[in-house]
Length: 392
View (cartoon, rainbow, N blue to C red):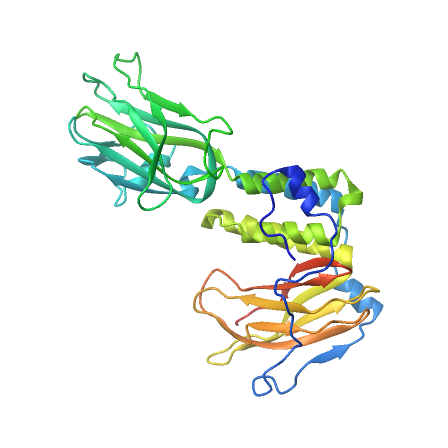
């Protein structure tokens, strides 16, 4: 079975990724059934020539170098980017200042600017900042930056709580009060969370900052949060270790890593790099296995007519591809018929085509097509290369 929940420990991650008996995503993989009405031509099978095989396969890929590059990319994606990875809610503010004026004040807290802006409260009005992370994060440090007109009694102590469900808030830290007027602005209030800080599950999803009250003209101008997605960081470390240990590289462990990267929930700005990383891992899997997967668009969509395409599965290896499931992940507004295929085993040296119709929508995001199966006693995952345009 694909190991989507790889351990946060790199050692456990690598151990889980070692070759294992083949098991699929589901307990039973059914024989391919195509809707005859939608696809009267049915399944096509051919034995490709050596020349056509070579022309359609990724060339010039050094697997070790690729894994190092992907390890660096995924490690970078694991770092918390407050502007992209935090959804912020503010309660108790009396006024906002920003230049230019913002309809939603939350972004000014994460824009790395500390002048000409601020969120202001009142001495007797609690100011609450709720932060929800797109994915669970191991938080290492939170800073609050204030600027404006100092007034006694200064900046109060700030409670930092983790919200673990709708009813439970757990205090995990306190930022000390600042009662002496600082020599310069901005004023910085900080709390650190060393690794192993007692989080129940190791990472947090929602954090609440409670400020009892601020001087009228002293505003909160910036929040800085340092943290990382522990699961992604472990994957990045594992890829770097695999690159140094060729004997550990196999179809199964790279497939497990690809599925783990694909399954992580990341913010929209990070999604293109996430998609490209999975795509590159898929190409490595093809080189290791000799199994290649493409979506060929033969006729682009025009008017009410869908794009007509074929899914090409080329098993150019000397071992069979086990029964597999192929899934089309469609952006909002897109349709496909069928959107899922259940594929019977593909013999060594065999190339098959599965017809599919795709109804595109006017979105920047494009469909992705993934194959989940087994090969030589290990799980196998592939993301299809798309050849051709969906619409004219």
